[in-house]
View 1 (tube, rainbow, N blue to C red):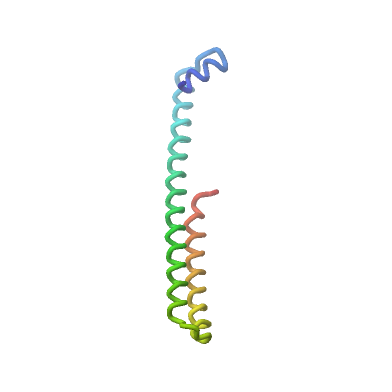
View 2 (tube, one colour):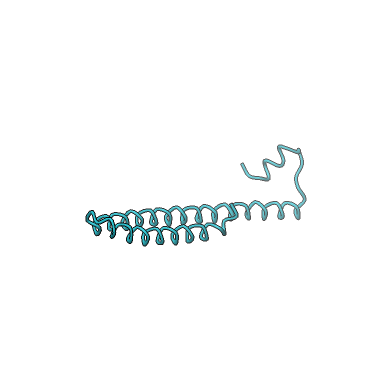
Length: 100
């Protein structure tokens, strides 16, 4: 059902042409904004997934390198945590434009 049909059903009368165009433009903007937001959400989800994969890769690599040496583990854990902090900042800044 079109927005014009919905309006007719609700009020029993038609909108003047100018108001109808304004209404149609407003509906088109909402649809476009919704599609853009969906793309942004999908992009953030993909980015988050990639970040999680890389964090696991880094953690696995740290474990492989330390070989039970607590000194190496302490040093590499600090580096890993620095990486995680950077990833968190990237994620936070990426999503800030959403206005959500």
